[in-house]
Image (cartoon, rainbow, N blue to C red; front, side):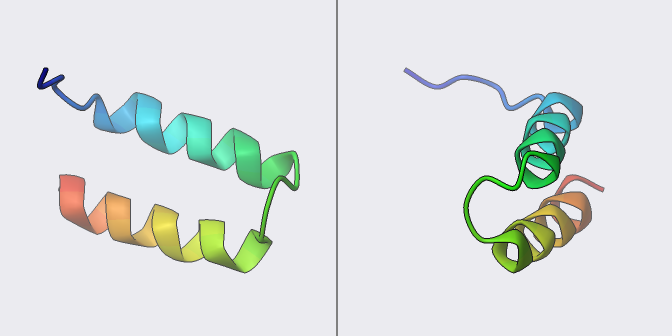
Length: 40
């Protein structure tokens, strides 16, 4: 199955995880930057 990626929702979820301090904080920062450049 191939689901279309809703870029805004994806970024919102990752930012929430970053705010909740789940996982490595610095890793989320780089992921968010990559996604924002990829979706533009």
